[in-house]
Length: 266
Image (cartoon, rainbow, N blue to C red; front, side, top):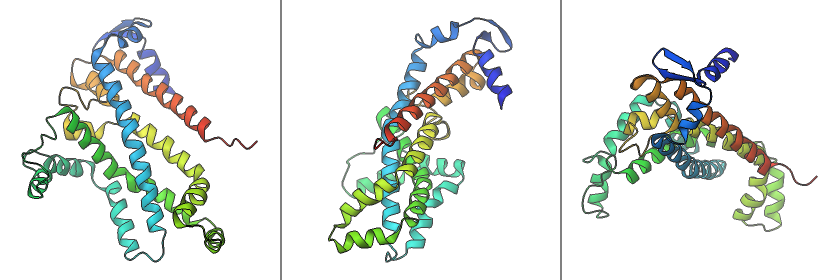
């Protein structure tokens, strides 16, 4: 682990193409601020982070709360159905999403049959709608993963706490907001940090569903690193520099999240 970290740090100080590289110091760092493609990839990545992570975590929390009810009919079936996308083949589900959101895909057919739209939506050809597809695909795939953590934590909460609140006449929404959510604080912090790291490293969905397009509208930092290293004439030094941008972002956001979640009662 240590060797590739140190080697990539050394590579980030190199300039050149292919295997012909020379020491360039902080030339690659200066290049970042003048690279419109990098700035676009950074903006896209932060956009996905700001939109997708809250949606996914809120849905996971709501699903877990619903499935925690022992009286829910078909609870085991729903739990399996929500978690199943996490273990679905990445390539298979990406092909399905490309087909569903194609110009003549089932999504457009369904919306037109319901009278919600008059003409097909160019899901994969329009920058805005392409982002929507990526957010939908990530949410569909990873909501169940976070739900399992919330559900496991909820099932370990002492039921007598809820019984006491119910006897005192506390409504269901208040029990959820003032009892369940505070007691899930460590798990919420964990899932937030993990989801943040995963989104900052987002690669598979943009690469397999939209190919980073249209017009780089779904290009992420990880996909840009891949393009720099393997798709075009390799620029390993600059790619390593971009990878450290992800490292810095992960570090900064993780510290912020731990700071916001710390116990202030002391």
